[in-house]
Length: 99
Image 1 (cartoon, rainbow, N blue to C red):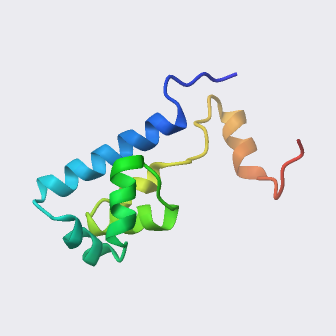
Image 2: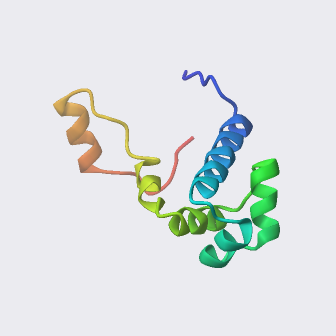
């Protein structure tokens, strides 16, 4: 079993705080980021204050900030510990879960 030090809510808040910091470092107002991303100002305010946002809006914000490529490192397959594990990953990925 894996244990996490942070809760999903804490991670969401950290991401919201980081996004806000990047926006401010660029000296952008919320309206500027809203216009460049297509995300409403209300959604941006809600994200910065409560860390709640849709995935689509989050990705649009990341794109407007020039950081979309960072999201590609999320949800990568686990690192293989052996050649055998690597071969199993490449052979067959199931189309649905069994449990």
